[in-house]
Length: 194
Image (cartoon, rainbow, N blue to C red; front, side, top):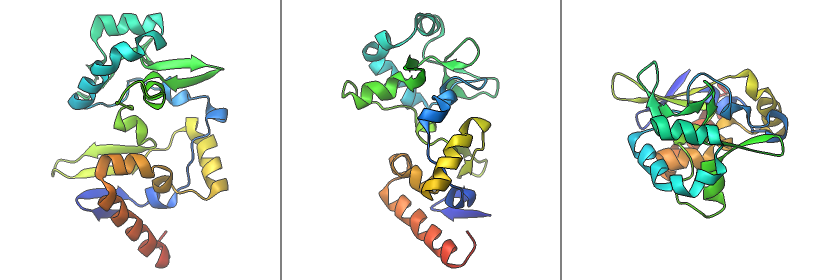
């Protein structure tokens, strides 16, 4: 089922499915798996470029080489702008510590060294945003084996995807939009639909 919240079409599994990242279990595998980088906007590319000096020493030599050669982003096979990758899979902003992968951009932000956190596509995961031909935006729940532990933890905590992603959803769509989403979820739950 799909609902419309202010011209954003949302699959209801975002409201009903449970999810909570479990970094201890997955070790940040989402930063190093896949065949393309994270989707980024032109504004985000500018934001990344503005903080590049602040995160440069956190990056691997291979990542630095890729950025020197092609920049922080490239156009993938589908024509989308995505973060550059190393070795055909690792995001260039992946850093490693204690056997886990972290985002160098987010780490610098959380350390108070920058004002740019990370691309919204990363912050929203496992929600994927798509632009529809009619000008609307679509939000889909993306299922990935890498995130089995996150689904398990979400079930244990009874934490739906949209509640787990409250902050990034507000960052992307605003507080009023998120309140409307919560009201829609409450109504669907009351009707027994989710």
